[in-house]
Image (cartoon, rainbow, N blue to C red; front, side, top):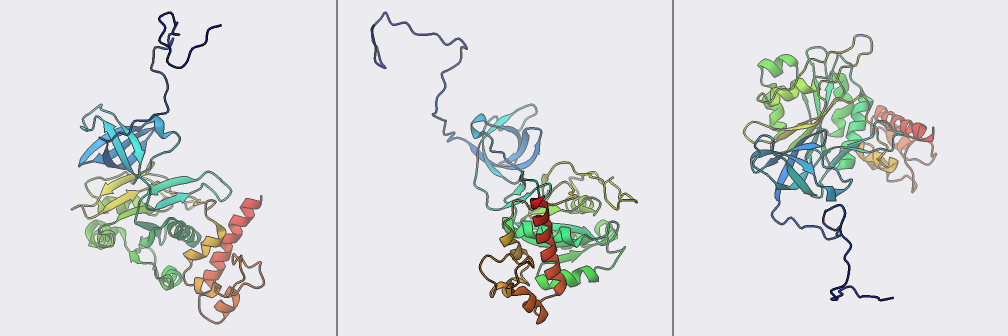
Length: 338
């Protein structure tokens, strides 16, 4: 039996044809040195709309990226037709490392992590003062996600014409979280939109909030050139709103003053991806009281040596904040143990 090396030069060697007619597979991947950088503006059924050198380009993810997905806010490298003309399609070949990541899970017992926005500087937590009623635990969860992902939180209170913000601000003002209070009338006819824009100057800001709080109305006031549908109403029985935004979308503020990322309304904000020991970072008013806690204490009230009880009893922090922290930790522990 004749054997041949890798490079036989005999003329009688038979080369097996490639029945599929395509090129042989290779582990060598192209470097795409001519790729241009862009920012993902929105994602819709596998098609990503990106901003490339001032042009809007529709692209799809290249096969070599595998399961790695790009989300709104990602900086990506794109090749192909970058003209932005109708019916053209480019390819995303690289996704740059993310500076910050806003993540959530559907519930605390859901292990599937969803990246909502990448590279945002700020998280605007939009909460109505009435219709629907404020949900402080939702606010706390968003604060946890913001601190965990490297974003600076901003509290935006809407519908101040229906209720006073004083009670809610009593709980959050000591945290040092920036806030702004608005009403629908001020957004439509006053200077509220400009006051909010000043807090977004030069930043990429993701807006989150449960349905019905007026988030999309606020975004429309901030970016009047790109109005989104706001026909969702609050259910009179459940007190919950209907989703009007179905996909995240990045919109530039007038005058290139920054970016607003409008996200779909959420009814829950799961924190399965967050280590319980890091939840305390969302409560900076309580964090100094943990210096005397034993190693491994997660401050959920089940460790008798936890120093937070004495810290709060001495008047260093509001007892309601400690209760909120422990209710949040108890919710995660209960669902994870089910």
